[in-house]
Amino acid sequence: MWKLCRQFCSYRGDGSWHGGCLALAELARRGLLLPASLPNVVPVVVKVALHYDVRRGPHSVGSHVRDAAAYVCWAFGRAYYHTDMRNVLEELAPHLLTVACYDREVNCRRAAAAAFQENVGRQGNYPHGIDIVNTADYFSLSSRPNSYLHVAISIARYEGYLIPFVSDLLDRKICHW
Image 1 (tube, rainbow, N blue to C red):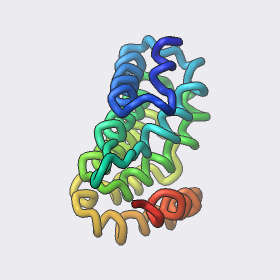
Image 2: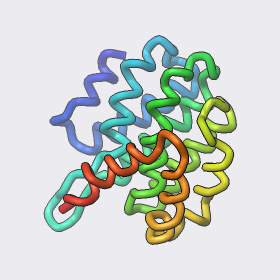
Image 3: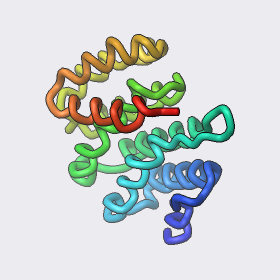
């Protein structure tokens, strides 16, 4: 496990982040990542990997890392009981939904929405989970303007989601290169 955690260093490249996320997802999916390690793993995946975006020349790199991070969140929903995930869900939901609404790549938006849907279906502890799943579906997230202008506004109306949405816009999107 320690070797895997070394993958998640700030100086590592996107290949290490991508591989580390895929390894974590497979460990979680197969039941080899113990629930006791979730408090150490979830903040790294949620705060860094789900929002990974690095500028390389005139373009950015990171959509494959964000997609793999959504796969990790999907695997968490499938692998653990709701009692193990109770504390994690409050941290996971706003980040998954901001990626589902505000990511510029359609595959990342859809992957985050699928991870949220899997967690709502399996865990059942998300506030307003079913309503949000109905709002942020596969087709409504296919258009970036629709994601920003309609889906995000609909989700931000629910209690607990407005502040993370505004923070994501202010911290990551408004000053994006």
